Length: 306
Image (cartoon, rainbow, N blue to C red; front, side, top):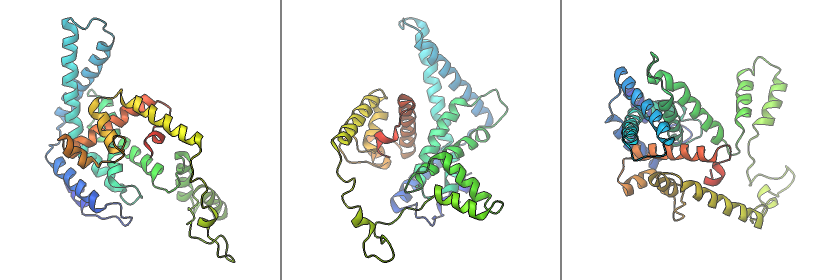
């Protein structure tokens, strides 16, 4: 696994998705990952048992009204042990996420964003891993982590986002292009995956006018309704952030520039909070997961502006 990461680290994709700053953050992440030993099969089962016990104890504790007795204290101890086991499980498997993410570095999405989305999927897999099944965690989690990374690519690799179901149709058409009527396939592809037009492009071949001049001023000014909607989105986001653990909420506020209008990189946040880069990534993934659960079926992306 380490060999795969080293190969990926020395590879610079043609799309330029590894910038100088990203390279520095990746080198920090790799150094931290190398210090985390891989888990044995027995350790995976032992930690998974503690994690499941902690989740069960948390459910039982939420149903207890009187928290002053010995029962709640025992449950709290089990929950704490489960959280420690979960943290160790996640930290020991970040290299799995990295190795999968680096297989998609030429798809138009920054590799750190892919790792971030993979970390969110990793946390879900840690919760769902059954210690009673005779299977290693990497085998259980790889497909789910890869699926999350592919969805991130489908959502953010294009200038104009194509819905996920249309991306699947696009891939199917491209894969079967040689088997079907070429004209029919090309027509379908042109409808789904139209390339954006440059604002400097001429309106037509016989005119010197450009699209940028024709669309100047269109949509630049926000209407009072849009301003009100943006204000409501920010207020709602702050309300949801207040329900998160303070440290997780602070990381999101700083990373997305909600604190003082200045976005901070995860590396900068780690230096300010005295935490490692990999641990800041884990906390951000956990915060986004909790925030998505709070939003339910509503759109979190609009509130965060991405």
